[in-house]
Image (cartoon, rainbow, N blue to C red; front, side, top):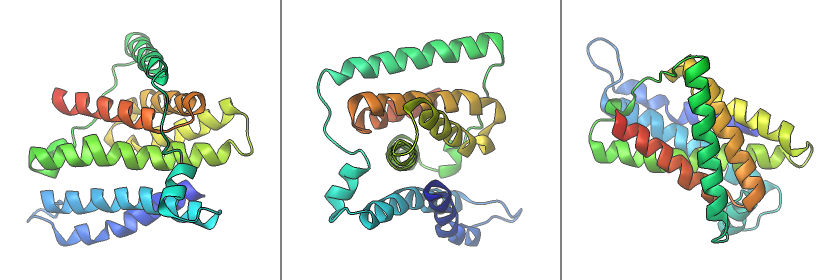
Length: 206
């Protein structure tokens, strides 16, 4: 419910974007930026609110409850394992099922610095906080690791369905891997860093 609420709040906060449309009724770059910023805020503010309502007494303690914690240098190895696992599974998916295609939304945000800020920085932080820190973390209080990771990963993948259905399974796999990485390291920061790397590569390739 928290993840659904975060998305709904994000969409509501992004509603002012409709004031920025062109002659054809499509969102301008400013409109797309406002919509994306609204979503980012929803994915950040709702988890923080829920963490505060469940005993966190400050912003710092809320972030720590959501997995924003220091990780050990040795955990870099697990980041490498996670990255390798994703690349192998992505390769198998592309080879035996379908080449994933995802809509290029970067240009809709206008200037390159804005694209970098929203896609390579804001999105990784907000999505990991919501879907790994809050959703997976909350599920783990009631479910074993694997079911919790699968649910959180599928929800994460489905969130990106509007950019291309064929990209949903690989993103769901990525979400599951990030959940397992969080479980192993005790921090969502490694996932944020890998998420930022993945988005940066996607941004450069487009």
